[in-house]
Length: 392
Image 1 (cartoon, one colour):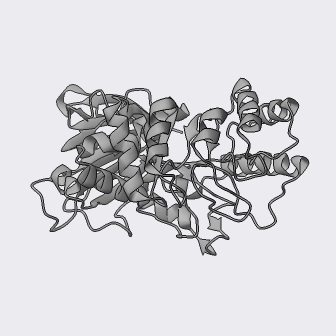
Image 2 (image 1 turned 45 degrees about the horizontal axis):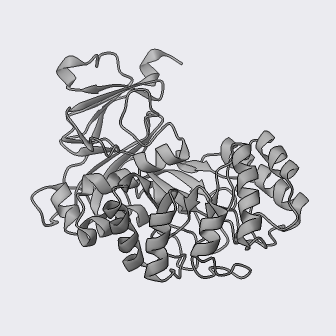
C-alpha cells in the first residue's frame, strides 16, 4: 500500500473534543493520520499536510473520538435474534459508535451453559468478531457467562485462547458473592476484565444482584449501576459509588433518574473518571443506534454537566478503563473519530450549548483506523455543517 493511501488529513475543524477530562477541549483546527493512527494535532499551518491520500474538510464542524459503547450483547455478525434485526451494528455506527464491548453473548438461542460449551462459545465469539468487523466497527467480544463448577484452570485456558472479558456476573448460576469473588479474582489473575450485573433480573435465568453481592464480588465494572432494566434503591447506588472503587457504568436501557444519581455521586466524590456509558442493547427495549448520544445529551442537560465533559464518559474514560488504544484525540492513538455539528435549526448558540439543552448533534462522518466508514448519518438529525471529502 502506498503512503498516499495511508495518510488522512482533516482540516478546518471548528472544535476538538479530546475525550480527556483533564483537558476536554484542545486548541487546533487540523488532525493528521498516518497508517491508521493519529500522528499530529494542531493548526494546519504548523503541520505536514502534504501528500495525503484522503483530505476531509470539516467545514467548521467538531471532531470527537469515536464513541465507545461499554455494554452490548452481540451474537453473531451484524444480526441480533433478540429483536430479529439485521445491521444493528451498522445503525450504531451511524450514531457515532466505533467500538463496542460485549457484556456476554447471552441472547444466542440455546446458549450453552455447561462449562465446555460456554468456553467454546466465548472462544468462537472472540474469533468471529476479531475476524469480521461489521461496517468497520470494533466489537470486542467473547465474554463467557460464568457458571457454577468453573475452576481456575478454566479461566487460564480461556485467557490463553484470547478471551479477555467476562460476561455479566450474575446472568448465569453464579449469584453468591463469595463464589463470584473467587472467579473474578481468577479472571483478573489471567488478564480478563469483569463486569457484574447490577439490579433486578433482566432475562430469564438472571436474578437480583444487590449491593452486597456487587461489593463482595469486586468486579472491574459495576455493570449498569442504573439497572438493566430495574435499578437498585437509591441508598444502594450511593453505597456502591462510595464503597467500591471500580467503574461506574450508566446505560441507556436503565433507569435514567438512577443514572443521574450515580453520576452526581461520582462528582461529589471527586471521581468523574469512573463514569462510563453503555446502551445494554440489544435487549427487550430493542436496539438504540443513538443511545450513547442520547445518554450524553441527557446527562449533560438534566445533570447540568458540560457536554465536553460528558463526551469523555463515552470515550476516554472507557478507553482508559478498558485499556483500549482509542477513545482520545492523542498522538499515537487509533484514528477512530466522528465529525459532528449542531443539528439544523436546533436551539443554542453552538453545538455544545445545544447538547447542554438536551438536543442531539448531527453526525456528518465516522472514521475508524483512519478510514472513512460513513458520511451523513441516516439516523441523527441533519448537521448544520457537513464535512466533505475533497481529495481521495
